[in-house]
Length: 449
Image (cartoon, rainbow, N blue to C red; front, side):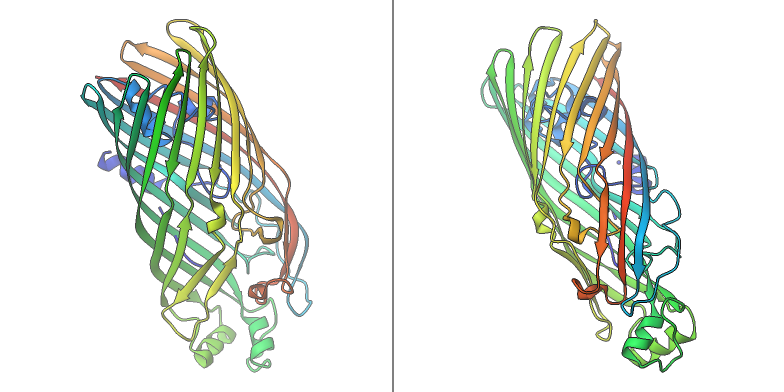
């Protein structure tokens, strides 16, 4: 039930706000920052610094790009997700009727990003980026069997990140910046007023479990501040290593909740209880910090190999608790108890000729979601990446990049029970599994001045 949403130019900002987010890194993080990185499965993202899109992972990499640069990326995330039911029952034991979710639950989405950098002194560089580091959209048929758990989940974050980089020595550079992140979201689900009538009002209003549904929709937004840091070190003439850190974002989402009580049963319960009426809401969410490290090695002037490892502190997300200004409305609680997660990738880049550069990579992305708290809102599982990409030099100062990734997910099981989580008393028991996959296509244009 409740809330959360999330360009260098006014028109670009509108594009970011209008674009749909989709969870493609673990949890509902988005790793899609540029076509260059996409082609290598983000192997060496903190060490390669092939272009200015690397500032999203390590701002120290800007020292490798003298002069002035601009880059724009558009990433299309084509998600595939279907649910197959094993069982769906109410707290009293009756079967919950409905579809398996209405087909593909993961709408296709776009994740644009824009970057700018400039060298302001021999050893000083400044830059800025607008990216979407977190995003999630899932949508089910309003009458599906899991409607009391979720119908729509829409979470988006836009991150404005001005940075500064300094060349300490010919081999070492450092960088850092401020993160100004706007997060907004919408969560909705059905309300089983029939079961509520039977269990709490002794059938006083003639309710029938599963037959007197209403809906609840909550939404809110907030601006949070954070920072990022990084260093880049040329360990040997052909080898450099890098590390990047992005801080957590502590958000307090302010907004409101609306209820459609569905008919006389719901209206009667709302009148008697004082609940299920429009109310202000507030929800605390800690978006996690990430620590990444990478290595880039030139085997020859044409061939390079790279690797990356990243840790994300998803354990900060123990629950989502929506607090209502209406004191008659009890908190809405979605238990998460997520784990910290790891990402590993390796890749290679080959310069075929003066105009064409080819890339490839593979990755393993660990989910933070435990089997026993997986919900229809984030039916996440471990996934494997296979990526490839290419760069074409249009002219001496302009480049076009392309990146593609196929994501293969493990089967995601769902097992939600009223006996193990009292917050599910009105949501019911739901068991089944998800078949998930995704295709990610990124295109990027970069020019220097």
